[in-house]
Length: 215
Image (tube, rainbow, N blue to C red; front, top):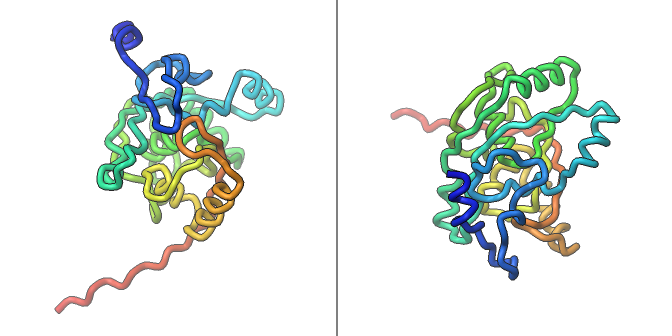
């Protein structure tokens, strides 16, 4: 199957990228199994030199597999239905590293929204993570409790996209609006193959809406 995809398949072509994309253009440097519909572009910010530098500073690094679907179609009605259910696999060794980091009081950084979705889908109420296969369902958005991930390295997303909605679980709308304004003013590039930002989780307090009174 993989050989057939490599021979006959074609990467998703984005309107903001004028040159035709080849398979190696969308293969991230740390990728393994080719199961994503589009490149998990946050990991384009990583290379083996960066990982070596992390190791020297005793920063842990672990991987998982997430079959990421498309992030945006450009059509608001279709985008409101995204993301679809996506399968993932989290190895035992990754779960062990996360548990060790949590015991030390270290923070968990997700490289990309796909990793956030996989880890939070596999999270137990106490913040531990289940190893093995699973399906990430539903949408992470404003008000979604984050049990595992403390920060996310992600691309520059625009309001209305499912990935931007996911960021609303990390930060309030005021901060995200200010960030979007600053990124636009400085000419940062959005979407795949664009620029990256690091967003730390805020302590969000949501006002509970009053329940309708029974009649």
